[in-house]
Length: 188
Image 1 (cartoon, one colour):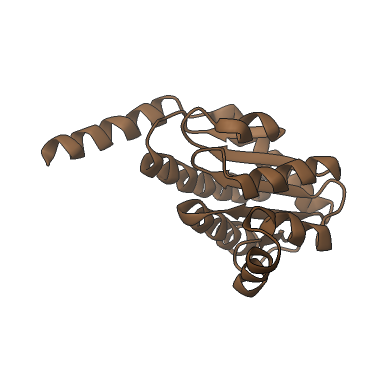
Image 2 (cartoon, rainbow, N blue to C red):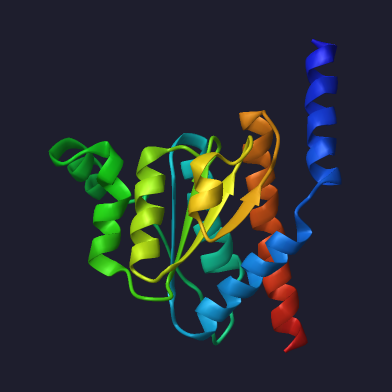
């Protein structure tokens, strides 16, 4: 039991020691630019990654927007369960995010996919579609990044073979991005 605790802490320490600071700063700048240009940010994921996507919307849509003149337009594609389940049932689960993007996406919007493995087919399909539409794409991944790391134009990867630590890492990055946005806004 103690070994599990020590291993988890050591893995988290590895991730923190190798934290992708430059990638996080770049994505933060992309998000601020999208906000300033009135663009929409779409996020998505499955399972724990879906929770990270929902959490992203709360922290960026509320905590990085509240009380400000310029606010983020951010939408989580996995939060509308009737839409998700309609496409999953009537079309195919691999198309649940693409079909929603077809209703809304514009050039230079941002599409962010969260996938611990980097190989979630529905996320990959949506990122590929977004690339074809001229959107800016970002992948949040674990492990070696899977296909999402190379398919997305920008990547934030935990680079660790542990799904739980990768999901923790994604939440940390969300909090850091929110803090960076608020810090930038105070400077302006």
